[in-house]
Length: 305
Image (cartoon, rainbow, N blue to C red; front, top):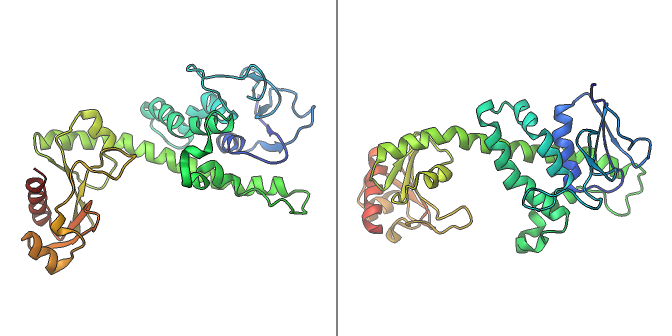
């Protein structure tokens, strides 16, 4: 039967049912999104998907709540929120609607679950404290989405529903952007692996364009590589390789003598004609040609050794 109603609870909203709505409204764009606690509306039916409300988790009946006891748990016994349940059952179909290649869907579904869905699940269930983000806790996605709720003294009787509808495309933009980036990593992997093979034992990885490369580099065990060279428009860049995505520390920094220099001053410091810029943080440098950037890369490797 065709899904004609997507039902979640009324009142204040949280990230989990908002993000669940992102998935379901894309899959069922003609369905009515209903926010209600009316018992009749929360009665399962073939034309409804009910989530984050209803007191049950029954995929066959298309009801996906997580507030009841016992609550639904992942295989590792971490708790689901409604978002995790919806993603588990509908996420792969959602990825297909975004044009993710069929061969990549399972991998991207799992990666999105681990990187994006699980933190939402844990925060919503109180299994993770917002304080783990430290002073950035106010900038986490659940906090940012929560900031879109109406203020406490908004007199409008439809304030919560209006805010939910307004927040939906904002939440959707974050979901789609994350999926696009995961899909891009999958597409880049072949190009990065080819560049790694071509570089051989060289500590310089040359890529045909800017692209995500860290995961492929780690998977290949290319620990000997120190710097990455890429074209950027009419210029070329030389960048350091971070130790991980959780730090700014690099396998090797660009030479200290280059820090903050531009144009003639940088040319004088490195002895390379066409050197144009080196960031004060020593994580990126720019030159006007491939020959110039490769010369700078060789100097950086020697200095790092």
